[in-house]
Length: 304
Image (cartoon, rainbow, N blue to C red; front, top):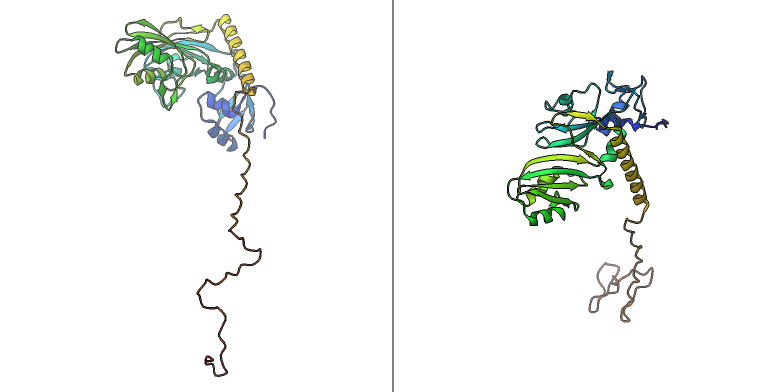
């Protein structure tokens, strides 16, 4: 095991967060000696800091950055939020063409548009995406038929999709064919699946807010977080972490039932006789012939 105690992200988690490979694959590459951290072979469990350099098969996959990068990007439709620049031609990384290595926080599917964050700070990713922190994400949605009060109420109260019930959420009609929805979870294609449950088809889906940060740049453009936005975001994330720690130590989990004692065996009937210990010989049935061998004479014939 590693004795590396410095602050940072475990190297397998780091490689997973930047989209290079899974954690399990990262561990295998470390064991095979394919990974180098600042010129040395790391141990499984070593941590990567923001100033560290990570090499895979001799190729640098991280940069020694001076500043953390936090971008607000208005993703247009047709762009895929993936770091797979080799396998996906319309990937978000090539589209932005930022001079330093960054990766998206969360996803927006190809047909959706709007706000998404990009960063080089792996520590912030899970804090924002962690579902039980209830971070709000706001969307504007247009559908193929008139929105009704009944539809709005049912969408807000939870919809059965993907084998679960969605959380209650805020839903507000904004025009005859559109509504605004604020979610605190991020199931795969959640809004489209929720609408589909009520036989509505989404025509346009745009994310306009994540937590305290609102979309304010044209499609295809990006900007840096403001200092105020970053400070507010860090405050919200600090409160979320504190809430999570408290709840995990609370009594929300159901207590395990006390172990049941075995019920006493029912008493034997008065007419039932148990066999004495050690006597296993069975008694002959009534009317059956005696099991005692018959004597024979010297010739071997039966005695009459």
